[in-house]
Image 1 (cartoon, rainbow, N blue to C red):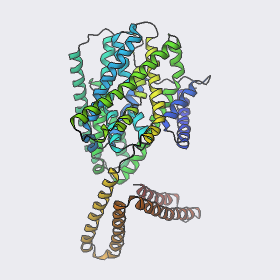
Image 2: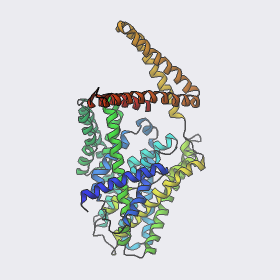
Image 3: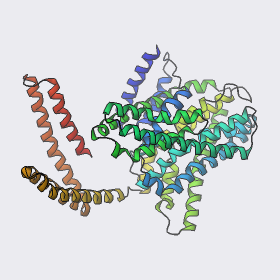
Image 4: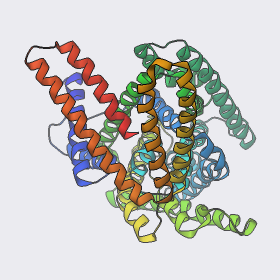
Length: 518
């Protein structure tokens, strides 16, 4: 099968698995990993190679960028301390714990490769976290911490991984130099990300044309990541910094048409990239198993120990930091609640970044034959257990612990809607003098805004009743939109209007329907 035919087949598989996942109520990355593993077991199916460079250079930048783009900077700042604690402190703690376990069980691999394995499996994956957790009813504060962690921990892990591999291949290792390299990589990545973010906003502000703006949007993560990597600083932090900067200014630099089109384009890009990565990840399991030189019992023992170390490290860190926070501040935030700490601990899913790092290990590693394959096998075991095992059980854990979504966002939204509607009504009173010949339109708009004010007040006081009213209003408006759409199609079928006119009418109706979803 040619590469182009294989790609088309993979895209079809991704679509099928996504449809099944929606019907089964399972997060689609989990089903895609399992489905990819099943595909890899089918005789005669071509082996799917997941090139590390492809993940790092083509897949990782846009996924990190778009995750940062939609991250709340306010929430990020408010939770900066726990985010940094998890993204740096927990990653380094996990690296060390896994290294000790791996070196104890397989001492012949040496300490550098033991630390390298720890760096590979330490960071929860940004793809897995955003794809799985956004579907669950987790309090917004916990989601913000997990999203912030997933944006930054890759930088900590990948820098540690590169230092460990260099030491394994015979390079000199100095803790002081390693710390300096880490600081330079982080500072350099952030600086490049800010520069690219400023340039991107400047260009897109002066490019009102939607196709041009979207093209610049798709190129932005690579414009941040590639120069950073070329200068040997953190491309991960560069892409994340750019995403945070551009996302903060998106509402003022883009037209409504660009925002609607951009949301659709990025939704498709994220879905395809995530799907391809996870299907390819699962399909490589049979080849990874066959490549190990040790017996399956030995390989499974090492894998089980490392998986336990990864999961235990996260729980130890979560409860230790929660205890410290409670001792320092008896009235600490909700994340010090043991139930919240458990949810955070159970949310450490690994994914494609860990596998890509493992596959990027040099073919010629010190130690006995099959060392590289063993490290890859252990990495896949960690991914499989954390992504599938923890990912599937996370909704049950949340329900069993009684961790419900907080109402902070809903109250903020209610206040914001009341304030924006009041501003519009105040401006309407001024428009009567500016547009004296359009009083009929202004009266209609005023009635609409006054109705919205009454609805927002009800939503603020009685959320449940207001939600029912909102659903009923939506059904009424949908019926009218569908009636207009059917009438437009009838006019086209009778030859009264052209297809081009139909498309323009449908575009307006589609935008009206999209506004109802906002």
